[in-house]
Image (cartoon, rainbow, N blue to C red; front, side, top):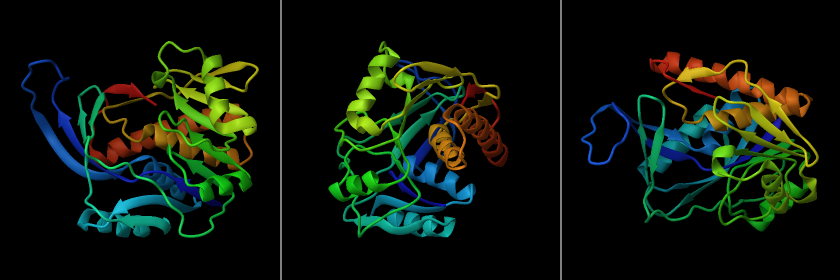
Length: 278
């Protein structure tokens, strides 16, 4: 199927540190690597692996790193007609990854906010949106889309129509699911029918505006690198929904698929298993 993925492509500079961060500490690292990341990249790549045609709506800097990333995206199978090249230089996301899989992300205060633009009309069998500020033309396209899954935007939000919204319970400390549902409804409008709240290796909460359901994970995996796991989950969820699964079944299938993805990536990277993660 044709899927439009709206989201960032990042350059993640990952430092594997040998112990957790602590005040006044002198921390060593065992490895550092630069690799592509971001919600648009991980979700889109997962959907390509499932056999879908993915059109990516994103922006990259027009420098050596950005141009290399553009070529890599095309080689991976992304349709890049709506990947905008902007003036400026690529800013890395510095990610400190400790042995337990906990990550600390450092972002520059000078990094310009990235916006996405459309070079022309865009349509698909489904849309996945991971972004805060959306152009009017894209919101119009979402209105006409058969299925829209959106990551829960947390700041400077452009309201957008969505059938499903996915968020992490960690982003809403102390808030009740009913209150989070109301916040999601304010963003997604009357079209919203499901809110999913993930909680790492713990159960996933489903909310349909009337009742809550807990989906317990039967295949939690131990990993020292959870980067991209949430985005991979969203891609697997959208894939299962397009197969006609119920929301509960799609959630369970997506969790199982993500656990399998983490195991395969750890095996390819030679990463030893450590802490549980979705």
